[in-house]
Length: 80
Image: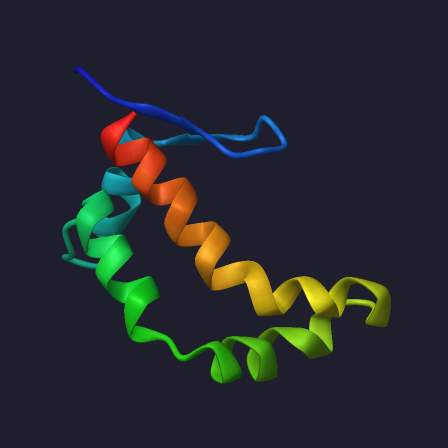
């Protein structure tokens, strides 16, 4: 089985085959392009509101950049 290993900036790999297998449990498919569409759907203010309660105050300024950085990383994964 061919799969793609996607690496995050901290060196944590995302195994696309694992993600696809897990999504099968929910009768859903997975693709990076679908993930990009879902990330684009979220508004920055909602991301900040939803996640800030889980982060220490000194990490919260990063939330302003989270959507842009996530999309950039996904684009790099898709297009190399």
